[in-house]
Length: 71
Image (cartoon, rainbow, N blue to C red; front, side, top):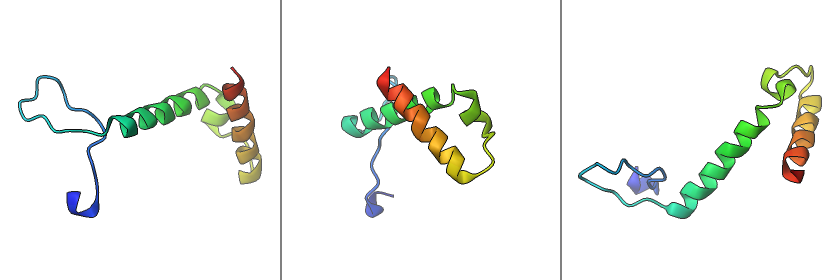
């Protein structure tokens, strides 16, 4: 994996004897994205995917993202 350029993003447990370094900035960005998806899933219409077309579903995601961003 390291030969392909992969790096550790999630920190290990504190009691691990063999500690490996991780990228804190990448972990912070990953955490923000995960939180955004959790907030996005709070809206029932998005979580249940009740829209019939991909276009209307995409429009609803943009609308919900604007609502989340305005909070």
